[in-house]
Length: 512
Ligand SMILES: [Zn+2]
Image 1: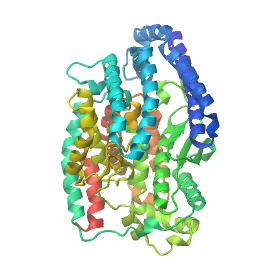
Image 2: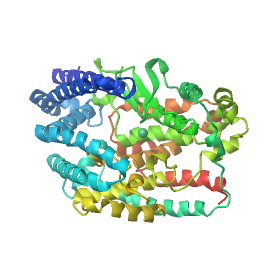
Image 3: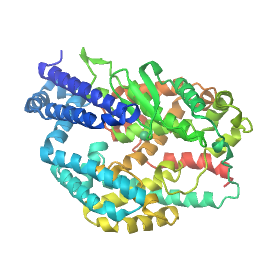
Image 4: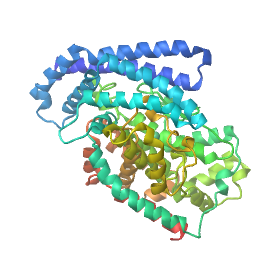
């Protein structure tokens, strides 16, 4: 029988979850259908909800309930139990919410929204000097935030920021994985660049209208097992996945007539996030207590979330089996523009590797170098080892080192991403962590689902989805990412599975 304080904590979490789901809905509407003139009132709505959530998260009574649960032997005697994990995460959330003084939270939000507007203008004009004073302000605030959270002994300020997105991870651990991965990737990419056997990109540029692309996207979503009765696919400028309640997951994508694979892979990526959200036990119960809103129905970390999206986008979507299944359907739904191309043409085209300037357009191999560069720069900014004024020159030099290209302007260099403008520091590394977790989970899944490749080639994704549902989604936040990885794969996170995956796929394609 769960104790009264535990039941009350879960009820509070459910209220917060419900308020958050209303925020998500408003946000989704703002990005999709809201008329522009509604923006001011929408900001009022969003800010009122945010303060309601903040009040509830920081309520002193919640702190007392957590403290009571922490001394309740029936909960904490077994630290690996679901209830103990929930209390651990209630504590973490309470600490994150209460350690920041209200005026700092307000200042971060205000400077963030101003800096974002300045960043838009600076990026458009490709003028870093416009953005520099705002980035300075933001970095100062973010450092203050890290100090409020507190730095663990032997750790660094950056860890406190990283912890918001990837609980328990540290900069040093990430560096230990990233540094060797970087040189292995760089060597491999250079080998690919010297290949005389480069795939043609013609199939990617078959001209296909948006409504056909939308139809095909929905067809692939259905095959993946994304429940369209509990979700939607709409159009936005920046694709995302948003969860707004136990049976409502919204995906968005964007269509470009001249490159249909952008929308296809964007949709598969967001659907990977969406399957995770649909797979979390939001309708589940623990000893009769509904789980919605509690840590046991929330995702583990951004890195694990990204592992789900990257798995469907890259490991499934860029495999030969996927195209064996998908191409006949694609020809039927997307129309005659694809008629000239074979499975091999498609498979080779979607796996082209070539260094480029923009992270979000980068291929599976070079993508991680973009992330490592940002990690290096933001870590130095937070440590105080790098001045904001030196960001462009440091970026450009590192870009040449990492990817071998001269950055032509800041728009295609250090001004390309929105993250720093609203204070998202410690976020970037989770993109590469996602790729690494995906590849490592994939090796385990292949070991357990012996004919996975053949299943994919038949468009049968049930066994894969069930594996993810049972082994990753069902746990909510019960395990930390590093522990889940060890539990499922028998080893700590490593760069080896990703390198093995890339080499095994790309060497034959490039004849190297
Ligand atoms: Zn993602």
